[in-house]
Image 1 (tube, rainbow, N blue to C red):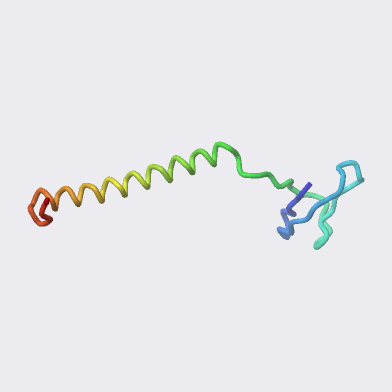
Image 2: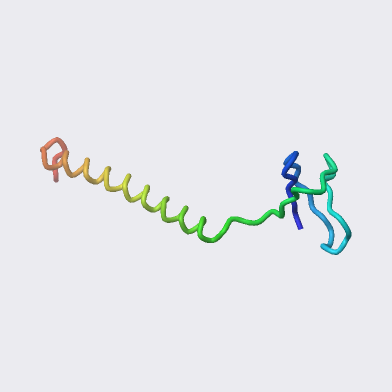
Length: 78
């Protein structure tokens, strides 16, 4: 399992969980060792939703500009 030291931010891995006390290899701290977790599913879904909103907003802006130019006659239609 991977851990991060809260004091010096050193990332390290430890063997099995039953091997006595854990300590940071750099600063030898035994308290404040936090297990590293992956990105939660809720954050991934929110990121995808936010990306979709940005893409749709930019696409809508481009389509709106083009339609405005077409209606003003600056871009001839066939």
